[in-house]
Image 1 (cartoon, helix red, strand yellow):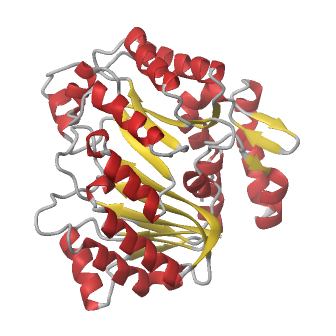
Image 2 (spheres, one colour):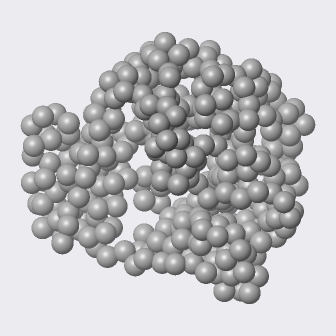
Length: 376
């Protein structure tokens, strides 16, 4: 059981908050599928003889690829690996790339889950974020996908946007719920180095939203999602029953995956690899038959800490019995010692040998998990 991630780095316009690797399309996008197919053949042994259950086109902007290019990549994966009977195949799309013809094309080549980068249903917020669509286009894209037989739709929303309020955030959430999307990924706006957003902040062109409003927006998200029957299954993710993202859940559960494309990461339980964050270097490695991947061998302590970092972000948490079967008792004892203060303050719950973070503390989960990490 494994997944495949394809990073599609092309963007028409870079959003001011984005720090993911991306490039312009000129002279590159047409040859991209053939390079991905070559990389697949060069690196398939990273997860040999795997049964592929999820495929994910992320970006960048995967919806800039033509349908036939997506089909070519999917055909190459099917020739290289055995696919499960009904793999989850997700494609991230910008609202203004979605048309009836495009959506029908996606369905015809095997895409069965769309992740639409809405970010907000407020036009002023979309302008601030540098998005190339408006609220009407966002709503229309979801309606087009639904009309054309997509019954597994996820949308991204951002909270903590400067100038936003509890009321504006509620309107975006209520619009999402009214459209009946099966999945929500909701992220607090972050200020990453080397982004236009951070540059503007340092130039004092705007002020960050105050922390109390951000916390209130997060709590409102939890409250309204619950009322609308969404399961808060991961720090930033909410789903209706049966619609948790299988691909992203596999990351958090430590299931193997192969990442293709510049800056993509791969993991097989023992080794983590990553491709160069340069299109030219990545392309050169593929064309010469020597991918320029870097790798990290994961020792026992690193593997242990990665489980803490990923699974405690989820509703499933950590099964201490299973953990004890895999790792030395000293590590388990140290973990339990580190949990004491958080268990006392109810920021952690230990029940039936499962350790979890209650969802009301997800907003500060990074700090909780940091306290549990074991160092040499």
